[in-house]
Length: 142
Image (tube, rainbow, N blue to C red; front, side, top):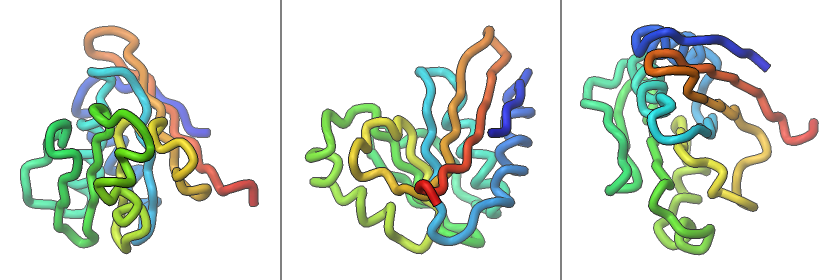
């Protein structure tokens, strides 16, 4: 597990850009953390690494944003989803299986359908400008 402290939004962007070098078509990234922990900022850094030109923002109300860069990025926000049935009802499983990079905020809501091979990024607020970020590679027990 990789852990680091980010003391600014710029540092979070840079850490995410560096992390994106580990991603490829079919990668799944689960983001965990309270509101304001920096999850969307982390997604912005991933998108920058893949040369996305669109404005990156949280899809809290739209649920899914698709970005187009050197690989498609599927940015999913499950904050407003109630359960796995509702999540499956909007087709999130199709994005998980797609040939792009799937990044899911509030990934803990994917109980039972989260891919066994993935990256878990856990973010926590230390203070107003500082975040702790832990990245774990989960390989499905292999």
